[in-house]
Length: 338
Image 1 (cartoon, rainbow, N blue to C red):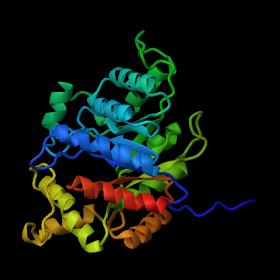
Image 2: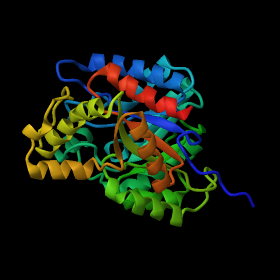
Image 3: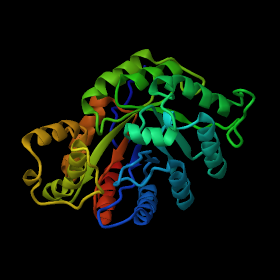
Image 4: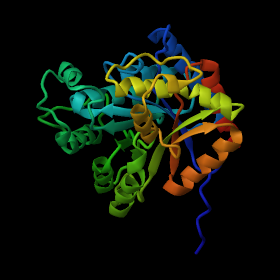
């Protein structure tokens, strides 16, 4: 019996999570141009997939109409998989998502992924504005996933079919930052993506729950876990730490309940946060799942992350204000893949 080769960043897929940041002093049009440029660059570098996330009422995130942006990115690239990381299913009628992603898959065959989350991706007021009612709750998420799968499988709900969508094979992923979706993904035999990049302390328990309870399905024979990590790479660790202050300011604004556009880096972030805020943000952006440094630091910490999580794939978020620095960060990681 052959032992499995050790997982490294050179033999497992690396992918990209783009929050389509709206930069302070800029606008969503520029965000989408930046996303297209980044997607084209990472496709050339050999990254496996490019995911966008659904967030609402967030002045620093442009990807609220997620399926529209996915189509835009897929149309500007050739082969990289493009998808949602994720669609917050409780915000939508499953039929609408089946039709949207059936349309995307029909336009870009064998390139579309559908990652599903059960959080609203927003506050309660925004959730109400999206849904018009809060009767649809996260607790209904398993039945909503069943309904969505049925549309793709060609089954009907109340004599309704999804056109396009019916009969299409679109990979469905469950996304999570706790144990709920880990258990559901295991039960349904689906791939699982964990949001380690903002929920690092739950990473290993959720992955264990997923792997220990996994039931093979027609879609997947064995568990497949993709784990998210923040990486801010630069020529020097000092510059990477400076660039990282943009993401730290973004989390600071969330902590204060007043989200902002993505701010430029600052020289001394200690001047603007309290010790309590610093401790809270450092816990969220834990150094194991938020990797900041030069090539050598990133190489060592990314390998440690892969070994600790036993990830089958890693998806990388790089919240960097300057577009050229964001592309350079992915280039540094891309070189490691070679």
